[in-house]
Amino acid sequence: MFVATYLGSCAANMAGYCACWTCTNVSQACMKRSARVAYSFLFFLAIVISWIMRDFARPLIEKIPWIMRAATGFEPSDKWFGQQAVYRISMGNFLFFGCMSLALLGVKYKGEKRGQLLQHGHWVIKLVVWVVFNALPFLFPNGVVQAYGWAARFGSGLFLITQMIILLDFTQSWNAAWVANGEQDERWLYGLLALTVACFAGVLGISGMLFYFFKPAGAGSCSLNVFLITASLLVCIGFSMLSLLPMARNGSLFPSSTTALYIMYLCYSALQSEPRDYECNGLGHRLNAASGSTLVIGMLVTLLSVVYSALRAGSNTSLFMLEDDDASDDVAMGTPLIDAEAVAGANNTADSAAAPGQVSASRDGAADKAAIQDFAPVSYNYSFFHLIFALASMYIAMLLTGWGAVEQERDRLDVGWTSVWVKTAAEWVTGV
Image: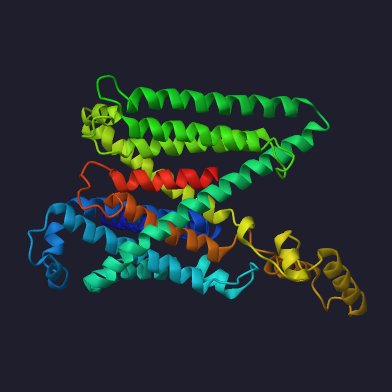
C-alpha cells in the first residue's frame, strides 16, 4: 500500500513537472513567434491597472509624501488621486516602450542579435523591467509628472494623426487593388461601387442619428451641436467633390467615402464626449440611466479598440520607412540578401570537391537555411512598433483623465469639453 501510494505521488509530481515544462516551452515559443501579441498584452494590462488605480488610488498615494506635497493648500479629491496614479503608470509605459524603440532602432534583419534578444527573447527579464518602469514614476517629483501630462496631450495627437494616415493609405491601396482586378473582371468594379454607395449611405445614416440624439426636442437650439454636425457633412461633401477633379492625384470616390465615414464617426465620438449634464447631449442622458455593467462593458470595448489600433498601427510601417540605398530597397521589397539557389550551388560545388563522407549534405542544407533566414528582412519595423505603443500610452492617460480634467467621473471614460475639441480638431485635420 505504501509503495503504491509512493509511486502514485511520484507519478503525479512527474506529470505536474511535465505539464509545467510543456506550458513554459509552449508559451516561450508562442511569444517568440507572436511578440506583438505579448507586447499588446502588457499594454492592455497597463490599461487595466491604470483604470483600477484611477478609481482606487487614494490609499496608496496618501502614503507617498513627495506626491502629497502637491496637495498643500487644498483638499484633494478622489479624482485628483486617480489622475496622479494614471499619469505615473502611463509615464512608466511610455518610458518602457520608448526605451525599447531606441534600443531596436535600425534593426533590419531577423538574424540581428538585438532583434532576437530584445524583441523576441528574455521575456521574464522584460516583464521584471516593465514592472520596474511602472513603479519608477511614483518616485518622481510632481513637476516632472505634470510636465509629462502636458506632453501627453501632444503625443496623443500624434497617435491620432498616425491612425488617420494609415487609414488613408489603406483605403488607397484597397482602391488601387480592386481597380487593377477590375481590368480583368468587371465584378471587382461593381463591388467597389457597392462599397462606395454603402459608405456614403452610412454617412447619411450617422448624420441623421447625430441630429436625433444631439439636438433633442425641447433642449433649445443646440447651435454648437448643429454647427459641428453640419460642418462635418460639408467637409465630407467638399473633399468628395475635390477627389473627382483632374487636379486630384489618384482621385477616387471610394477613399473619399471611407474617409467621410470615419469623419462622421469622429463627429459622433466628439459629441458623445460632451458632459452628461449638458442639455443637448441626449445620448448622455440615456447613458445616465444605463446599468453599471453596461458602462463597464462600453469602457472595456473602448480600451480594447485602442489596443487593437496600436497593434495594427505599429505593424503597418511601410508608410514610415525611408530607404536610401540598394540594400534598403531589398529590405523594403522583402527580398532576401542571400540567394538560396546561389548558396545551394556553392555548397554542391564544395561537396563535389570534397572527399566522400567528409561533408554532411543534410547539415549543410540546414546551415544554408539558417543563413538565409538570418539575412531575411524583418516583417515590421521593431522601433516604430514600440514608438506607437509609447504614444498610445500617452493617449490612454488622456482618455482616463478626460484630457487632464480633474472633473472626470469615476464611471466615465473620455468625457469633457477638452475631449470634444481635441476630437473635433482631429476630424478637421482628417478632412484637410
